[in-house]
Length: 418
Image (tube, rainbow, N blue to C red; front, side):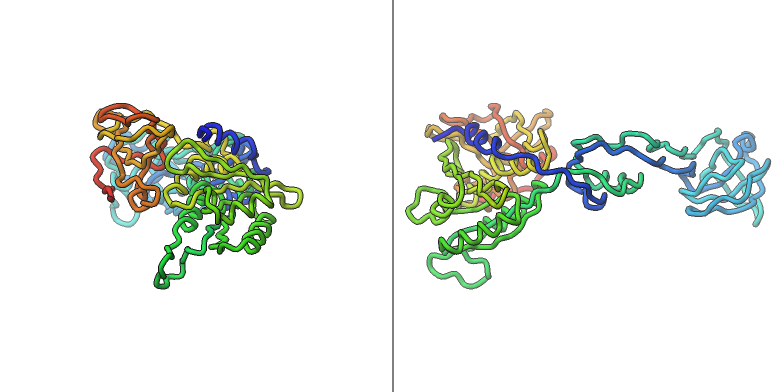
């Protein structure tokens, strides 16, 4: 067996960041910026009102209550055409430009209409009240986002607001995902003896997407060497990486091992961890490119864990995430004793991580820990590292890898299965 760190090195030394492309701001969501974004416009582009109310001269409303003559109305999107004079007010809606002569806004809640031509002001305001100055959010020339920033939904909105129509990003990896095995069924039909429902490919397609890559579902491939070789070779011409599930153990009938050993430069590993001891990684030549191949074990929990620990950070590295390619590793309090036997491996137990009243992250088991028991792992938000030995006692500290948001203190939203 080799250590997990040695397995990681074998993978990460072989993957590299994909090329930089220019894309529309609408396509930048989830991508990593490859260059700074510099504003070419002010946001907002003109001074405007932050509230519905009346545009006034602050000097006219220092002695209140007072009445002003209403000389116009200004909606958002309209250009002001009236210059405000002494003793006058203009009805104004949120977002509308500030008319010439006005230097403050009185909220509508602090006013009362008097007839059709006047308004009573009940509070005094200072110059600048409720006015959003031009460039108060972003000023022309500002570096709005630095290279390396991951574009979330709000950031994409900012790109739109500053008219950054295109940006430079690292290309999102395109990843082919397939499962292998004559026993797998995904058509909803009644199971025959020896058949099982396919779950790994279904899960891994979504995990690839959650990692920030684009997943291509290559389906279930039967245990047919020619079919598998053709599928892998064809897919390698269209994708940046391949993820397979099943057929990487020491079995005599592992078609995946036979085919990949023949067509790719593969390293077959037995990693000192549980679950996910068997793992394969290599490079498949496709024209002038070398396409990384991640061979995950067939047991569903093993497939999930090996993806999290080995494939996910490699794929995110390819997408330009740098240090952000890795899940956060935190020190936690183990709320219940976890027993294990010495076997030379690090165990990765699926757990629920939750903020405690003491401000620390606490963990508890998500349920049954068998490598085939996916249901009890489905809502786990952390992998607890249980080093080789007799286990961890209650209230002891340990390391955990966060694979989801930490639950709030007192949350009962997740129940254990098994």
